[in-house]
Length: 105
Image (cartoon, rainbow, N blue to C red; front, side, top):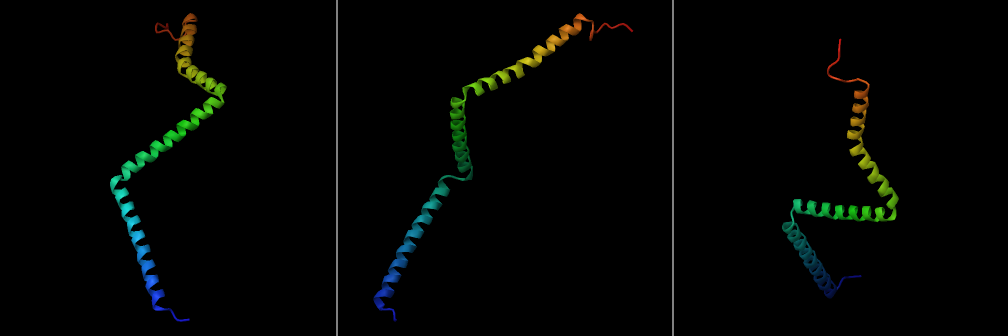
């Protein structure tokens, strides 16, 4: 079945239209890349991921308040406990004469 001249012209017109759409999209992508460099894109991606992580953490904390309280108490105990424990051990050692600087030989 031979191709008619009108079919060839229609195919050329469609190909030209498709090429115009492609070139327009390519120009938009290049303009977008020029507007925001790699550093800006990384910053935007990290910001988005940080927001997402923050939202998930907030959601989890609101669903499990007891776990959040227990975690906060554990952190406080960890930060405060070491100096308090050291002072207690030092005080007890001082009562029994351990660790004093004026030891006799």
